[in-house]
Length: 334
Image (tube, rainbow, N blue to C red):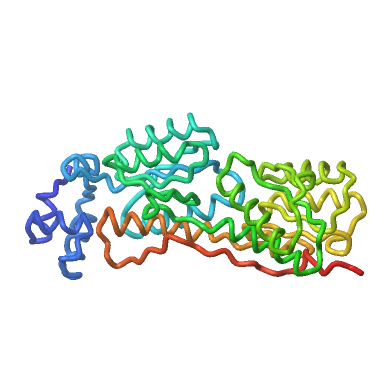
């Protein structure tokens, strides 16, 4: 079996130079780097990454904890994290928390036990106090889609309150006054923030928030179906529906179509997230853009900058939501 010593002999360079090439150190000329890589390929040499991590106390791996793996929301985020880290020869280990505090904490321990250099966390159930304490440990953490003032420099987040405000403001500007709302699960921080923005927009237009026209969903299509049925069951009049995410909009609209209602002729809809299908369904969905893929990328760049000391990257912690106007919301008739 070839060793690093064999590589140095074939390439005609020192052991230190071979080590710098393997660690992607920039203090090596491209010509020398290629000689080392060619020697490694010719000898079939593969670095012992486990031994390297023990020697350097760096595994070049990052733990990523997400709430779930299915749906159109988390895939783009994880893809950007993986691509950004892979471009710098870092790898990811993924765990799932299922929006349950015990499972989230168990997954954190799992990732720590795997020797990850740092953790990227999209968590919803664990407390702020737990995350603050975790941030004080020897493994750096970065939070996605959550803001905690005490560790704000480690938070990559969207202003969800503003996003909820923009969604409601849009239908208000179209003349709607009786506006229903299907929220996300109220145990989730982003769902509560979007609802607060919704209430702020109503107040600015001199309208009271009617809790009877607010039902709790689950961020999934079935939650939109159930929420829409609940709203119709109230018997209260409403001309527009704002949903806390796009997946629930698709379920809610299906209920309306089954009842022979037209969108936006009879009911206007606004969503949240701007996931890919929003621009392909009919009518095309007016929604709030949530750049989760960019937030995933920024979390990875934060680690590259602060942990792996890559000063070539720039990090943006705060993202501002934007309303994307399409066809699903129209001016109130008459």
